Amino acid sequence: MDARAGGQGGGKAADSSPSRPSVRANYHHGDLREALIRAAEELLDEVGPDGLKLREVARRAGVSHAAPAHHFHDLGGLLSEVAADGFERLAAAIAAASEAARAAGRDQLSATGRAYVDFALGHAGLFQLMFRSRTIDMANPRLAAAGDAAFDALRAAAAASRAAPDEGGDGRAHMAALVRLWSLVHGLAFLAIDGRLDEVLRTAGTDLGALTDAVVAPPPGGWPGV
Image (cartoon, rainbow, N blue to C red; front, side, top):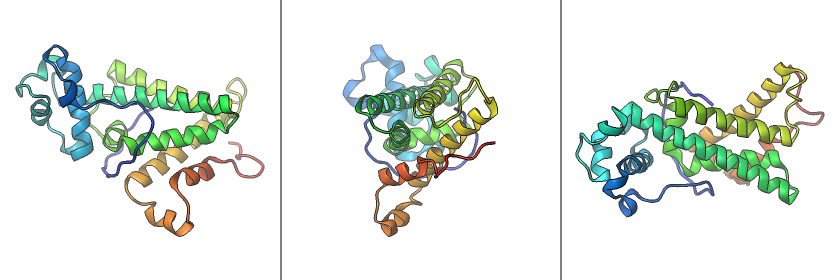
């Protein structure tokens, strides 16, 4: 998964995806790299990707302002690692939701959509960094691999729910189906983060989970071909 568009929003909701404990509760000087990543993620939820400064990350971690350079060189290096961590956790959340739905005989596509949106709202600052920040370097090997892993998790969930044609058949139709699914849940996630769905949900008398189910559900006759 890649992201190049600019912008910023707000909003946060609880989710069941992996999260990091507070940096203050766990920091020790033998784990500076991890402490800086945790501090950066805490600040992302407070100030957003555009407001985050390397000096403030160091202050939050309780180290000198020069300390981050030993591990990350600059702010872009640090945030690329934070974003990679986010993509890895998103992939894990998607895979876990899909597997749990399969085991329970539930709709895996719905579970996948909910996992994606829940992760976005539960980690709004991190999610915006992953997809809206120009500071991160998608050429970073770990970040590129993590983005691919998140897309592969979405691909696997779509295949399991038969939301995409067989990849071995029409490759163009297969990719179009995946991008369609990704666009639906991704757009929904950012509309929710930006507070654009509040009135919609009130008017419809529903919640975000039910709306997600409806958005990813195929229309009668299935999705159109390419």
